[in-house]
Length: 94
Length: 469
Image (tube, rainbow over all chains, first blue to last red; front, top):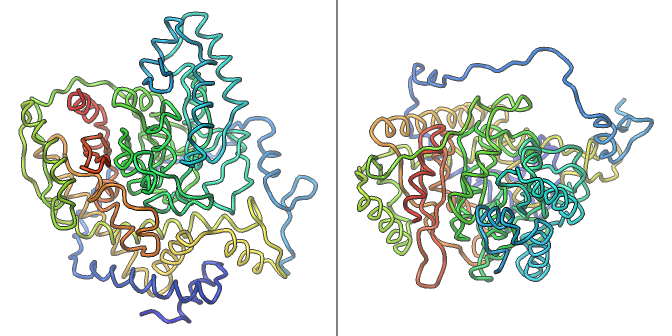
């Protein structure tokens, strides 16, 4: 069983505000799920060789500006909750 | 003639022979939706103006004589896929008022073909769930029994096709989200090979697993839509150089593998009987049935619920109350993050973010994430070995038919088991089709899952057509 403190620590890492009842439910649910994951402990890992099986190579694109439809930037900024002069506004961090 | 009962092919013939226009066809679907969807809740929003404009334009093309199979055909899009200028909510409060700034590549391709978009379909919140019930805007009901779930996460996309509210739909499949609701609702649904269809414009859930695919009334329609939406896209680096080519593979020339792990405990006898019957049908058609084993199957679910949530915890970090969607007031920036995410996400999304954050957190990474990646490799190897011996695999889509609304909602682990037969092939990036195979005594549909090797959708679809006949 994971502790309430652990749940709160993970929630903080995830930037997730949880109410007290949510913390309790999460404690129960996460414990059951993490117990289920124990199943994997018995699996013998494949050797290094077989891990290289994936044939795909990295796909990189050139460091170039791709053409975008006119007005795309405005549309994206329009979706932000708080904006000013065509910029997305963020609370002061210092 | 009831226009909404026609397949894509039949609708296309009707348009060609001037039996009806696309405007009339579109009107028939919109009326049908308005009549039946209050109860079903398959649609989150209708894009009526867009649909009418597109239908008018399609009729213009049709009048000229030379037009594609999807031209003028009404469809619906899962509300996790962007349609420019329309709301895209991912069935989450956090994106309740989000308007898509551009078209997903699949939507762009459908529009280029002249398909008509009726609306956006319901789903589990951010495509996390197995029943459609985690939608922040209410569950979709199964058209075959309204006290039961549709399956998920492409709940609305499956129900809309089953209830003749769209001629075809697009869904997305991360662990079974096209195949499982297709099975529960008695429609055909294809989860393509990872990389066969561009993910550009699909709201990300787990990027190494997400894949867009079609749901439709029959296999021929699935093939038509898949042919249009598949292929390389420069906007998605994981999309593959791939051009779909139809195949005339016949069952009589094939070896079909039946994995024994998919017929073990947990499989409901009625489902087993229907699947065994379908296998027998393939055998009668001349296919060679081969018993095979996929020994890592039992680890797949645990593996998936580490890898999926780990990717989720990274992908959903962007919903921070700053860039889009819901933003809550806070005393400082951290407070805005905490409150916006805390209030905007539903229980299942929070649960998966928590699992993922835990698995990736300092001190646990090796035991969970790294271990899961190794197990994923074993699962891949299982399938690779199987496809050295056989051409296709036949198995159930889900161990049971549609369950009652509310039955599994409070018990996440039992909900996760609904995807136990769709997850392993997904971890290996393989294509899988859910093909309606029969109904239980109480009238609930059951789907046969046909899994193929990478980029062998053509083989799957050719055999499925033969079985369907």
